[in-house]
Length: 184
Image (cartoon, rainbow, N blue to C red; front, side, top):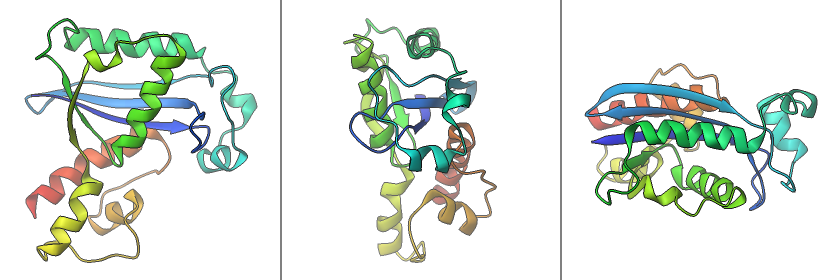
């Protein structure tokens, strides 16, 4: 199985927010093949929320030093091409991440902005999302109810080190969290 563990950091939560960091871990049959950490400027016309920048601890001056959005996107596609034959309908990544639907929306928005209609050629509809496992495990009395279901809260519960709001740190922690949850 090919799994793309992916996380993004963005300029906000609006529909027109842009990813400024895309990080991932590619595993094939549970062997880590590659980690990536791509920083990119927001695409033209993106919504940039001051609150989001404060969460990341970044300034616009720092973000403007990142590579152009299209360069970062092309770098990501080059990585995908190493592991997926986009012309083979059966060769796709299972996408994994914490609240991964948000990251998929960001990835698809980025593809749309760069006029790439084929991003889904790399991605399966199957997903792994530890956030979606919490309530079923709570119903089975395998996990307690905590004050919230944030990644940081569950990492603390499982003693997983996390420097939150850095997408590479977040996705590493998410992958570890998933396996700890599966042990339950």
